[in-house]
Length: 328
Image (tube, rainbow, N blue to C red; front, side, top):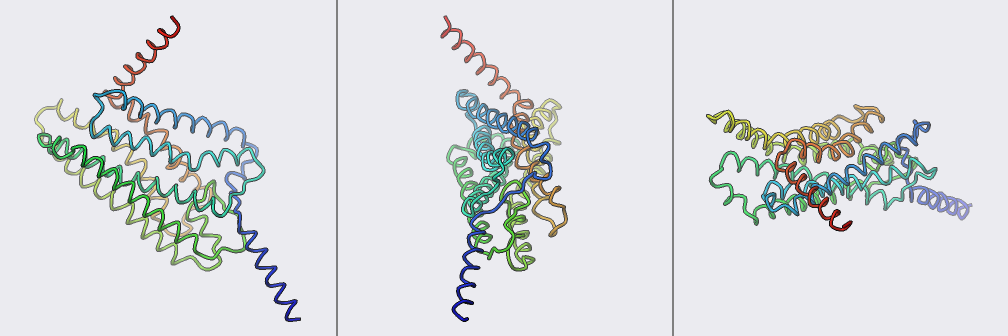
């Protein structure tokens, strides 16, 4: 009897371990009738996001006039957006057309890690961009000395390192918890809170720790951005020339819009009480900051920035001339 009982327990454990070797991403399974429409919509968003951000990178690279600190950070931001959307959208697109919506335990951990990595890096990179605008407007005479190439590289590298460390800590913290029972993730990718719901034990304190950590990670760069813009606005309002004020505001407006979109949705998503939103609302918020914001960034920067529009026009003319030469 003892042997049979021990064997049964071992078989049950093996079965449980096997079941937890994979998760199922439910995604938009409640809307199966619209899967094809959603696939087309999200595919278009993904293609436009990648092409738009890659175009920004190319335009900055080929135009010497844009080799300035502001566009150095914008090039980093565009690269981040391509990586950021590539972590979640391809898997979501595959799941919309496939009956098999599984993702391996390791695959889920990797997806969470890279999503957090790029998201946290973007938080700190936006703070670096705010510091650049602060230096340009509040210290114009010393701007080139303050924001030299070495400082720009250091700020960008610091952003990437912070992303690596925070993502590693959060992912390790979540995936060392005991999983059992249900393996259905009611989300379209492996985000922290939906994955925590599959943990065997009560996760109240785990959620609190994540909220505190998220608040620190989000609020620290956000406060730097806020202080920078308080100083920027104060300096702009003291300018005598109306044209000078307009130009100063125009150089900051694109960055300010991007910050508002990204931080607004991220703060609502992560710095909130447990289960304050339904799963559908959570998915909608996640869609906004992981899918909608990256597609808006190149549009915001290209439509509101005269230098980028001029560079795009010049690049388009160069490509057109090259094509005409090839045809002739």
